[in-house]
Image (cartoon, rainbow, N blue to C red; front, side, top):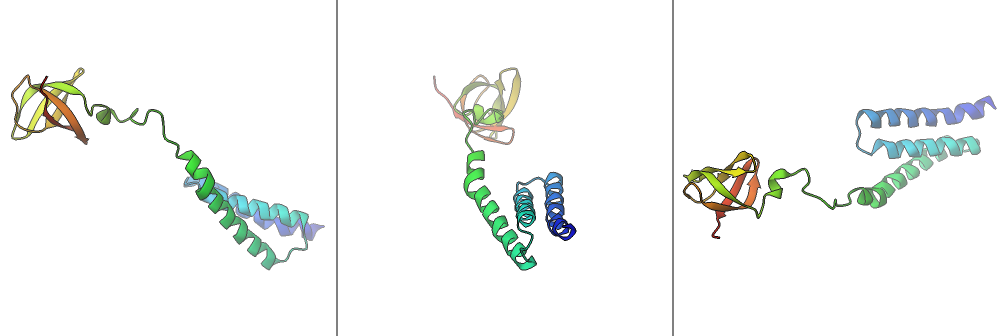
Length: 149
């Protein structure tokens, strides 16, 4: 009985070490291998006559299956698109909006008032007070073009 208990302990220890590694460096990778080690520990507990080679092969198969299950099933469901994909991308929310230049665009650079703040803009030279439309965002600079109307 003591030998039976000892034979599955290494798998529990491996599972615990991998779980701790996952907690220290999260990446949803070690946890699946940890799950495989825990399953091998459970199987060895139920089938104590399983040899070391059989345990190792079972671990490899379960580790590959759990990783494949993660990449094929769990991860695609975790990457669901948000219904508000621009929620934390303020600059991208401004694309298509129109603003008035607070300072002229000279040599391709100026400033536009967006709400209560000023944003750097890049675009064709335009005078103060011109209306511009945001075409894109590069960091904290808006790429604009003249907007008529």
